[in-house]
Amino acid sequence: MPAFLGRPAPLLFCLTALCCAQALPPTAGKHEAQWSQQLPDGREVERHFIVYVPESYAPEIAAPVVFMFHGTSGTGEKFYRISGWRQKADAVGCIAVFPTARKVRYHDDGKIKRLTKWNSYKMVDVIAQGEQLADDVAFVRAMLSQLEQSYSIDGRRVFASGFSNGAAFVSRLALEASDIISAVAIVGGSGYRAGIEPLRQIPVLQLVGEVDPKIVARRGAPLPMDSEELRSSELGLAMDGFIESFELADDYRVQADRRVTALHFETSTTDAHNRYIFAVARGLKHQYPNGRNHPLVGVDLFWEFFHGRAFGPGAE
Figure (tube, rainbow, N blue to C red):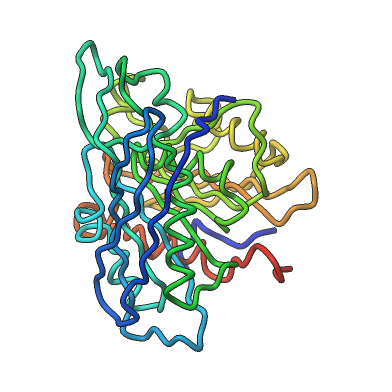
């Protein structure tokens, strides 16, 4: 078990969505899927996602599900190839899902860009005039519904991971879709909206890179690996958002080794079985660590965090 994981001691878009659900192949392997969604202006668009079913899948055994959300300009296909979740699905028997965000026009550093972007809370502040934001939370619910129609799914073990803009969107899911998501693990980004209460208190793991260029550019130096310096840094505000939203006490224990410093917030003020871990990986840039771009293998860390966390009907 990775040492740093340890042990546990409103602005909403109301969009009309149409689902054209089609049964996915019951066989193991990579399957392309789509969903029809209606935008606010009435246009219907096709949303695309990849479903990977491991060889070990058996209909008589309910399988856990992991959704992987790419970052800006990425695709589901890219993270199918590089994230490691396909291989982890084969190793542990989960079904892995790799959706693709819509391309939208948005403002960035004085320019208007058109790239794939998930509808995180931040997007309303940068979206270009006349652009349409899709309800990506509805997209996630539709994907899960389509999976449930095609496979035997363990609804108590549905997890989400995201990178960069995908991490910001998964932060939104942790609030607005925590009735169907059991735990989340995010890398290189975050985002929450003050005043929005989560539907359920779920565990959150946030990993950032010590030398993430975006962070270094803002603060002029790498992140500290010392826990006290880290808690008092500007990223302490990001920690505060999750601590307050998920009703955790502002006390923590520290686990650190040569690779990672982790702050564990584990005391729920409502007796919920949730926790929040904020971790910094030494030498990690703006990357989803996969063992090739950095010694850490993110999917191993995140699956260990997810494993055994059953939330929902019938869960204790």
